Length: 588
Image 1 (tube, rainbow, N blue to C red):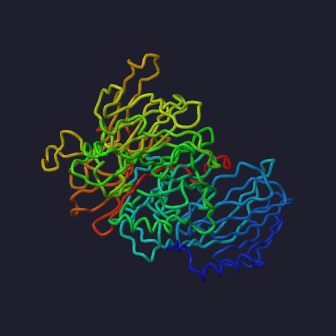
Image 2 (image 1 turned 30 degrees about the horizontal axis):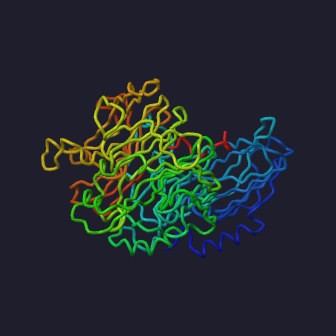
Image 3 (image 1 turned 120 degrees about the vertical axis):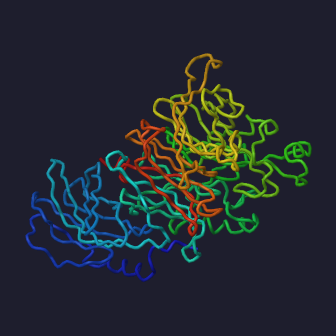
């Protein structure tokens, strides 16, 4: 199955129009009459609308983005070095892009932020090195239609208090007809609930993070990670193995073997994606990439992987009495690697946790994301970050209910130096409430940590007692670990946010989730896997909210989006608010 952003006929028309003489026209700022104007899917140009710099001429060619129907690539050529900015206007929508940070006579300019099925007039603002601005018409561009069953987004926004920007949503619809192809999209919606960004590739695209280079990085289960630009062009493609490893089962498949057979197609990537760079440490056999790939300040990446460990009959009987299979234990491995794929360090949770003392809640489960009858998902890490101040690698371990901080030492190879453990059987005393099955740990500027507490198996809760129902929450912990005496280190809960669901019961999301601190201080909370009895048993839904933490009850809701219903079950792994789609060193 393949992404069908454009029909083949449309693709041919674009090639023809983009290669014709009318797709690229040289424009001089002294021109006083407009040439005939033509509307095509690819590009048109017309004379400038403003005469400021008579020595400057400029030409514009527009190509539809190959991997997004609502984006375009502008080839801007000028007679003098200029910095450029683009304004795209339709009858009901307008986009003003950022300005390029460099002066050049040649710019390949990504035009993003458009809505689908709109006719846009394109203006190019060219700023020369003296600061003089000339405005040129780039013609028109018709954005395409997104070929995917998206719902209408019922969005509440307090425009005065909500963080401006585009919300990236890792949209996972569970029942997509086969004709729409393979792969879950990443969509970006504006504050009017309209889709203005689209990226789709094969497999599940998750944990999308902006990089300092102005690109995005994401993992794709079960083997790899990709770095891609605003138009969806993949710059790097990493994998831990060229073939599906043992022990990996697709999340929604009841038959692990059938899922394994299909993985070769599901991870193949879009046409034009580069060949994968293999990440293969000499000292450990990595069997997956999953949940997160985190860009470090030193240019390397932290990825979550797994490896398998044999067990003795005595261990198996202790862990899963009566289970007759000779299963192995799958533990999570953090791997630090370079863009060229060189593995620098690894941290295996097997080396620092005792599976017999902390078996977790799911070690006897035989149907899940990383498991089959012969391989058991023990720790199920789901987030990893680097703390530059502490020089620590911090990982969230869902099934053992822990946040673990490892020392990031100068030595290479396998590492096992633990700084502290917060949570179940942790080394940090906690003033506040423990978390259960955490997700998406995020470092704050003051060294505290924000995370999503799903609450699975929370003590004192009972699904059959309305007075004792479980709940999920965002929670903030202060970590006091700066002193030389580690016995005095501790953690303190500073803040939490809970919310009632649509049925006036506490919102409880059994899987996935995210919390993000935004530029204005608000917190974006992704309740990504709500599985209640409303509107019918088994309905999978998501709800993304933005809260002002200083409000009553832990925060006033200023942005609220509900996704999924009885007919279209949906989960959202993570969401991210970008103040602008134009970020990184290429933009002012």
